[in-house]
Length: 185
Ligand SMILES: Cc1cc2nc3c(=O)[nH]c(=O)nc-3n(C[C@H](O)[C@H](O)[C@H](O)COP(=O)(O)OP(=O)(O)OC[C@H]3O[C@@H](n4cnc5c(N)ncnc54)[C@H](O)[C@@H]3O)c2cc1C
Image (tube, rainbow, N blue to C red; front, side, top):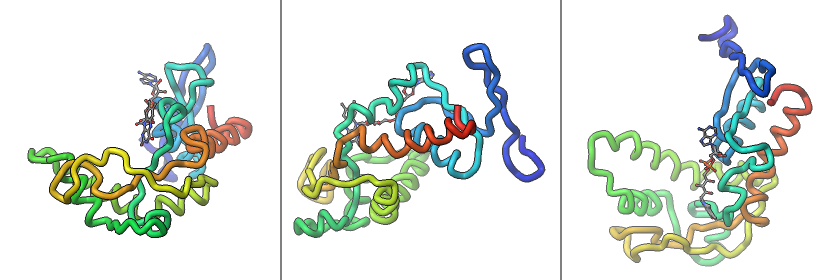
């Protein structure tokens, strides 16, 4: 359902005995949920974030993670002499995924879109949020050593300066801001 202005109809959420009005409900306060919620808040929506864990666990697995980011043809790679491209990254992805069913079409489209993001705006977008990178690119999930083998054929694992918590921080900060303004619960 949507309002006349195209915005979704607010959904009442009952939490801890009170009712919350929200345009968007995000279930799961891991990194995926925090990014979605922060983007919805930044777009002017009132957001409710629900999680089975207490608020202190916000960030989910990403809080405990190494914060290694998949980036393609980055300045960090080029400085180290790593020659990467969106085409090579997509070939690596396809080799690893071995999509072979008709219903894999959407997954293939998603992979192509994500590689474009990782070779394009992802690094600048994260930098604009204050996310900094360790200058040495690591080679996780390296798998095989040729474009037809499994895994990353070149180093692509860009570690966030401050690891997982530093990646979660800007999204959590945005939601805390929204909480203070009464638009995020
Ligand atoms: C130690 C470690 C190191 C890692 N290092 C890296 C790395 O360097 N690079 C990398 O790319 N990836 C890494 N990963 C993987 C990466 O952290 C995860 O893939 C990513 O954080 C998942 O985010 P998510 O939001 O999808 O899920 P999650 O972080 O799992 O969040 C899901 C949230 O949903 C909540 N939830 C689940 N079910 C319900 C329910 N029914 N009702 C309410 N809430 C619910 C959970 O409590 C949780 O808070 C690492 C993971 C671990 C554990």
